[in-house]
Image (cartoon, rainbow, N blue to C red; front, side, top):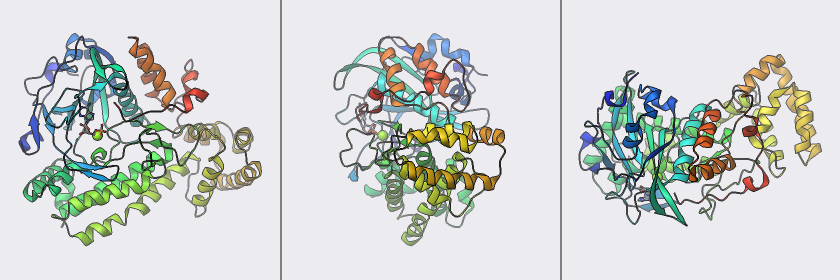
Length: 486
Ligand code: AMP
Ligand code: MG
């Protein structure tokens, strides 16, 4: 266990030089105080959990102090936003403070979000509000707890610094951890600015730091593209299986590591709705729940385009064709597990589709359905769940087929329950729960956000006394409008 002063830095991205990032110092926020910290994320840096209580912790993560070995820099990138190309984006309000080398030999980027203006701020103030910082914190750690690849969050610090959004709010900072902050948009930037040497340098960096096994391949950049594609196919399968809507799948928000990245107006589905649009600013529904699959492939095509100076176009195109089958394999596998099936069967896809169609329009709570399906033996569980459906004849037909399918696996109920409860969370990060703890935090009460974070860090376990967090959302909580503003 280390103290904050004992961290070891090895700033590989900074060493790429000024074509890739610009040195910028964090601009502190006033009267910093720790809102919430994740001991699980601290462990990635080998940090003693007690360090979160020290005064220097809040100071470091509010921009007041800096390690000597840190080299804060704003990264440059570009990307396709809502389908259109934006030639220059970059870290407009976040800084890569440096890379910590942990005892396991892993590098972890420390990225301070909300650290003030940079050359890439465009018209923005360089700040992040408390509301969105808490939302990103909760989601990062929750997705990780669910087993879904994600950037991580070390802590949120609040302040008295005023920030203007639709109304006056206060500035906060989020310390994000990831093994890389390289986005698809990094490659796009060097491709569209026609700097093939820098594109190659970026590629070499990514290969050697993050895909070293690809260096052994005949075509390392093609192998890297395949791995990025495979990881993203698996990631999107997780999102679709667990009802997670990202909301802003611009190519600058897509990670080359295939982790969930840059949380904005995200949502977990309450009632199942394939067309759900969680981003209030997404008028056309480009990033609706069901569009996440083709959009991920679209973004991979944008990455592939940026790699054309390094890889033959035909090979990239062939790889893109692998995305949907890979996605589908992962998705079916996850859904089978959620439904309690051990083996795979030809008819599973149709049975899953029928279930989703029955859920659509019936106001069935998506995630609770799977949890409750595992609570008791199929016949009893289905009898209880039946009440939630409007098309009863359709449900009965499906339920009969589900029972027959489940009987084939022949699982004993207690084993089935344990298995299903191990993949179907009892506790869901619902927007209304986040909203409640944000409102308390805005009043200076951080106990609710800490408690919610604690509960959500063990989403599959029964936690006596905390049942209220597992309840379905109240009517007001189902239709919260979350905008891009953050
Ligand atoms: P996002 O929609 O959060 O993924 O951000 C898109 C781009 O806008 C990125 O380049 C961000 O760094 C930048 N950006 C977002 N909010 C701000 C802000 N408040 N100040 C400066 N830049 C920002
Ligand atoms: Mg972004």
